[in-house]
Length: 175
Image 1 (cartoon, rainbow, N blue to C red):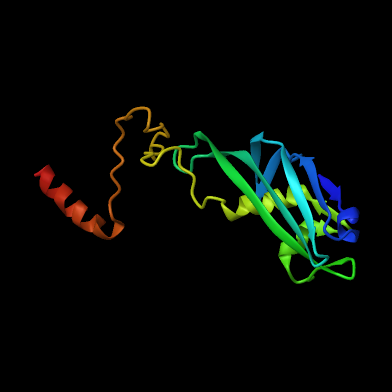
Image 2 (spheres, helix red, strand yellow; image 1 turned 30 degrees about the horizontal axis):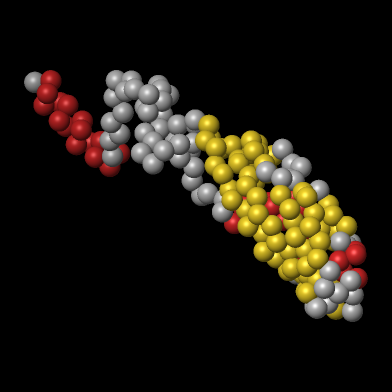
């Protein structure tokens, strides 16, 4: 969703409130698409402060669907979004630094609400997603979810550097 903020840029000390909502159904990160299960509409507040800065603020919450990194179960994570940004003004124009990625949410007098929210979600993006703190994951032999029950498979992993010792012990067992 894009908002035309020309009036706010041109009028000193002007304040506006825009009812907005994220209009994306998924977020793409690291080549993977994550669906958005909940998104709350909110008021985006803009304030032209003394013709020097435009203050942008708003609060909402977005819930994204992940899969547990160990057992592949669906996990929903809520991201509380607190937008507190600003745009610098000079002579009635927004001054942006082309090298700054922070200003990607603004272009040609339009504010990209989706980009603002996306940037805030990425700040809190989890490095690892678990369905619960002590998730046991999947059996490496049969693929059974070990959180549900034990499958009985022998999942002992031997150190390959000690394989020769294991062979020696197995020879003595045969005698």
